[in-house]
Amino acid sequence: MRKKPELLIPASSLEVLKTAVIFGADAVYIGGEAYSLREKAKNFSLEEMREGIAFAHLHGKKVYVTANILAHNSDLAGVEEYFTQLGDMGPDNGPDALIISDPGVFSIARKTLPEMDIHISTQANNTNYLTCRFWWEQGAKRIVTARELTLEEIRQLRRQIPEEMELESFVHGAMCISYSGRCLLSNYFTGRDANQGACTHPCRWKYAVVEEQRPGQYFPVYENERGTYIFNSKDLNMIEHIGDLLEAGIDSFKVEGRMKTALYVATVARTYRKAIDDYLESPEKYEANMDWYRKEISKCTYRQFTTGFFYGKPGQETQIYDSSVYEKEYIYLGIVEQVTKAGEAQITQRNKFSVGDEIEVMKPGGENRRARVLGIADQDGDQRESAPHPRETLFVKLDCEVCKYDLLRCKAFA
Image (cartoon, rainbow, N blue to C red; front, side):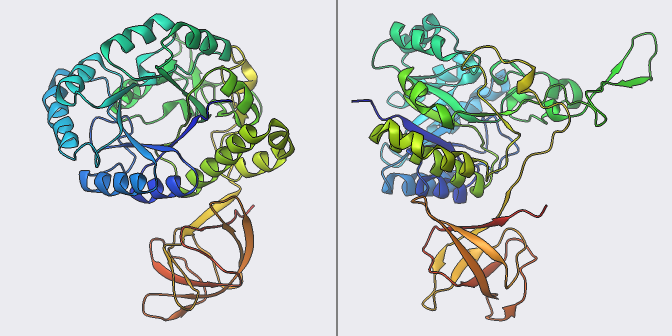
């Protein structure tokens, strides 16, 4: 019998963490307010972290905390204090593992939190089995493989490392132009260090060429009449290759996106949850449901799709040359926080919608229901024709029954 892999989903906030748990994640990875590689993400205060971990543990799920910066001397004392604070949460109420890339940070974690599981981040460039063995001997439990590895290389890793050592690989999300995310472009152009969590994503910008002897003369690099985005990779998507990922011996299927919305997280988590479960039940069932997976995964924002390095070195077809714009088929309206006695859905509204609109109710179990908005009321009970202001608490009457944690979305305007 095949071992069931972990589905590991990112969360940028407490709301997104809860969404990930409800919509199918086995584990969630988050960042604290420091020492994480997503400075622009909302990230978690210690109090939010406690609440999120408690929610996940209540549902039988795990939470991993990222501390994967490449630390400078000035960071080290703060890292030790931060790990001490995480340890003070206790073994039952604290994180289930730390994700670390820097050997110095690793040594602080081993000293400060000797019982804590440690996962070695993809930032550590884990590309061969001797590197994996090295980290195992230091006390690491899991390696996050470099994104540049093929499935065959991962199979070779699996055969050459201890059976108890876990392998985690990215299976979905944005791809970085630099080796395992170790990029200098952001620092060079803006002074904000990607390896310290402050990436400005210059790989998504449009570029021109300047010839050394003709300074100030900019020559566009045309792929077509709209120009070219020469560093802009398509997004990774392995939803059609679950069997190959399992056969390679990957223990944890990781989704990228610690700056993504609840709609993105719910869509990806639910789709991969169903795909994994269907495959383990029956490869034939998985194949029969492939159109549903493809259709659902395209309902979140994405930059077209690729299989990355899994089947060999990517070619020019994995780049997007004419645009850096996301594909966006659906808009996030809100998640049902509770249902009133009158059957109204209480939400914190995220995007505009109006009475009479047809929307979609996205249920954690996999069902999508079309619904019409019959009424919108604010906290004072005043009726609204539309909801144009984000972050308002609203009570929405629909022509179908809703449940707590259902997610409301609608098609994006063309």
